[in-house]
Length: 153
Image (cartoon, rainbow, N blue to C red):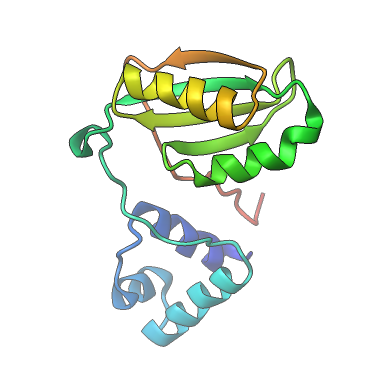
């Protein structure tokens, strides 16, 4: 990525709805050249997609929890991962180092919903051996912006 790619990526992380004209002006390019550059970043897999950032509480999903998962039997990994992909409440799934196998970020309607996910889905249907849950009380920072190192560095 050159400096223009980095700048375009930063601008799109700040405002994915920026017009080609505004992006082009910020980059010092023509609108078609700016569009071509963004399409190239998409083709290279630098830009994975675009989405609206939604307030989970406003749409009825006020509880956020982080759940550490221990599979116990590593032969269940594929079943677990396939099942996790189908659970809309699981926003993130990370394979982690340490005592646990995975760390999940879950967004749900409340403690009953969280209990259902833990007991019926994770431990029941997906065969998870152990979970450790941390419920979020307040979020001080929540960002989708990735730091991008300058080429000049």
